[in-house]
Length: 95
Image (cartoon, rainbow, N blue to C red; front, side):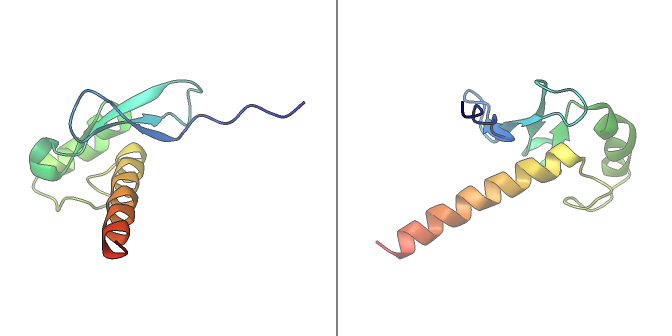
């Protein structure tokens, strides 16, 4: 019997613009909410790592999009968004 398809690692929230739900690595079945537009584009995640490590760096003015300001979930959500954007642009180029 074939194994079930794994759940997608990142999914759009469906109701909020630029908000993604990212699978937790430590808690199977749980997802973290990542808002890519929060904090002037530096993002925001509801995980403990972001609150303890990344938010203080953002608050202190560290550059957005770095290891200091992004948790694992933020990195995955940004990568997912960029992949969708590039696929859309490539499709438009070929039309």
